[in-house]
Image (cartoon, rainbow, N blue to C red; front, side, top):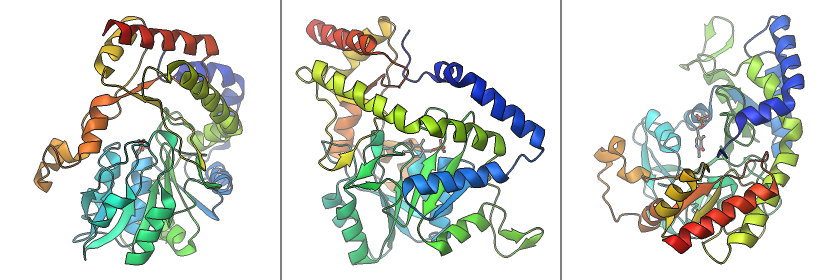
Length: 366
Ligand SMILES: *Cc1c(COP(=O)(O)O)cnc(C)c1O
């Protein structure tokens, strides 16, 4: 069985080092928002090229807290992609604001800046571009639009740590960048976790206060907030894994390059835009034979996944927004054609050959 993510394999590779830091952290006696969280905040901020990093409880909370820190709430609209994990839009709704979708670009499956334009209204306050599959959205175009209309840009970089756009790292281009440390992400812990990175000291300070019940000093609460803290065990594990992140990304890129060679003629392979560094959180092929391939791979012991089978505008949870099938044709087309096949850094090149061979066989039989 070749899995889409191999978290156990990765643990066994790093077992001694991880066990050691976990034991140290347990013995240190400080378990929430301690020195390891602070060190991780500094490490991730430096890696992204931003002055500030604030550890939070999840990627979903990173998005929610960033929006809330910008004062976004009831009566506001936030534009985002309908082709993403639910959390992106869920975070908007949780602030009281309304998610407004704009269709995606065929080549990258990222939000299409041209389609953002006519979604902007007098109520629009922010844009959340999602760097889906590990490749950044067309940020210059997004930021130009945002500047022209005085909008906040919050990057959903949950799938894209280490990705680059014209030499700049994911998370460093918008007013804030949001990351997830969910176990399957390129840098994942052994539980939930997330981080907001930003170059804006006010925004960083606001998120810090909001993650701790609106409190800067113990039992003094200057505003509403909630509990969204990162813990020391996750931070200590993430600090160990961080040392391998660049190597893992390079391995993912090499595996993706090999797939490209083997599959370029039979399916639509992922398209890397000029000047982008794609981190291949997912290697997503597109083909009208998607469902046939999926069944065939699974029957042959290869795990694969449909990201995302139902675009957000067609989710029952958003029925009240009044969208219907046909509203975002590119997102709907992607939902019917995209298949993610294994690309995790624990894979060897012969396994890529095997998977590619099975994909070709499935198409021949289709
Ligand atoms: C994983 C993910 C999130 C949410 O992160 P959690 O840590 O699971 O809350 C948000 N957006 C995208 C695009 C993601 O892939």
